[in-house]
Amino acid sequence: MKKTRKSKKPGTNTQEYSAETKLIWGKSFTPKWDYSHHVVPPLSSSSTFRMTSTKRGAQGFVEFAHHVDDLVVQSKAPIYIYDRLGEPNKDLLEENLAVAEQADCAVTFATGMAAVSALCGILLGSGSEVVAHKMLYGCTFSLFKNWLPRYRVKVAWVDFNDAKALERAISPNTRLLYFETPVNPTMELIDIKRVVEVARKSNLHRSRAHQIFTAVDNTFATPFCQRPRELGIDFVVESLTKGLCGFGTDMGGVVAGPAWSYDQLLMYRKDFGGVLSAKSAWPILVYGLPSLAVRFRQQMNTAQRVAEMLERDKRIEVVNYPGLDSFNQRTLAREQMKDFEGGFAPGTLLYFVPKGKTAAERHRKADRLVNYIAANSYTMTLAVSLGNIRTLIEHPASMTHSSIPPEEQLKRGIDPGGIRLSIGLERAEDILLDLRTALEQLD
Ligand SMILES: *Cc1c(COP(=O)(O)O)cnc(C)c1O
Image 1 (tube, helix red, strand yellow):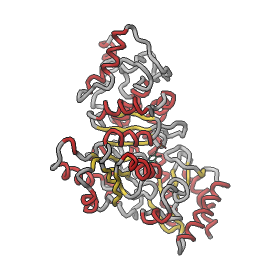
Image 2: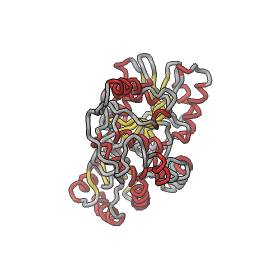
Image 3: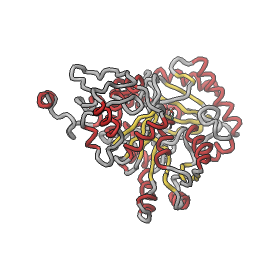
Image 4: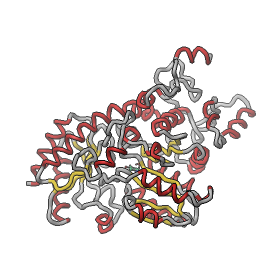
């Protein structure tokens, strides 16, 4: 049986194929699901799995989350027990996500926030400390600010682009350096290699039990635009709800990291229970990942044109898009944001601020512009979320980042007039038409 499969599908699982093609085919033939008759993996929707004997049941429980440092076990036919422990659709998706992120393993969760929580869960305990970049996604900020301290986990906030400040913020109890790049919503970039270097230097003097780990939330870039693991980062966390799902139909999250973390993440997920539903894993596996490259190429082209148009507009003060020549971290953007083939991949999101002498005036203008778009625009919708095939616009200060008090927002770089735009698959000309009309509201 194995032989015929091999001859049917030469080259399966080899290094010869590009990561982009692997997003579509994954392992193609896998013991995770025997779909030799299916071109598309079937939607597996079963909360429990049949055992042929108590012996096999016992073996399943013994083997669960016991890969230790030997992920080879993964390639054997798994014994499925119960959805919360693992099931075929999630497993297939996880294999493909690990390849996409260049990680040893990936474990999915119900949402991006469940993934962030799981990462904290396996790395932190009472008394440990996190150093986080001063600006994070609103709910991650709230998790770090409001919940971690209740478990006696301290969070220090610093500017990760200030390597000296980052070094100073690290204490003997620090276990995790956590950041996003591009930063949501400002599109500021953090130099990944520099953070990795700070952690590496600090780890030289630490025992294995006291190592510092680095984690990047890669939601904005997706693995198509950036693979932090290739630059030495330990963990990537990501919301699957955004660019990876792409169509705005499902929620999910993933932690991708080193082999040793696999069993801990599985155990954490089993006991805390935030599993990705098979019904949500399936569309991400079948539609989201396979279309990631083609969606992102198109959406990035449009984002570039929109950014250039906004930059030329006299009514706009700031446009932050890593693809612009005027982007103040242009060199870093070109080094760090690359597609699987090494091409520049500045992403599908941009941030801009209307002109105004005072913060209040910029806020009023952003309000006017976004409300006009909400009421009149065909191609742009006022909604949170991002990475969707539909163009979405939102006002971070009052929406996604409202958990951060206004005076803190300013300190952390969010302007009251800042607007976040997530470019979709609509024709560029149509988005530009809607934007041009809307900008007249600022005259
Ligand atoms: C949306 C988002 C999250 C959270 O993901 P959910 O799937 O909504 O839980 C985390 N980080 C970033 C940068 C996000 O944009």
